[in-house]
Image (cartoon, rainbow, N blue to C red):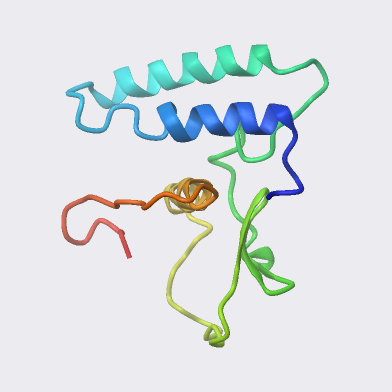
Length: 131
């Protein structure tokens, strides 16, 4: 259970996980059409959220990631999604730049998907960054 989640976080991130994250993938929609549809859907969802409430990682999913905060107290992740780290030490430099906008957005999506007990399938051509 994620202690940082309230009903509005569950609502917005649940909709993102189930509908918005994959919008435009394999549908034949152009990038512009998919982006426009996603923006309208996010605006609609944001308008449903109680006034004065904010949902971390929803509206700001393209914001940069502070890499110094990825590893904290035996967990890895980006607020509000964190996963428990294993026993192996993480090398200081893995060569990944997780603060890049698209990489950060994809990291948030994968971490969001890991919050439910279902398998995750990453698809894509060789060299597109599935690792």
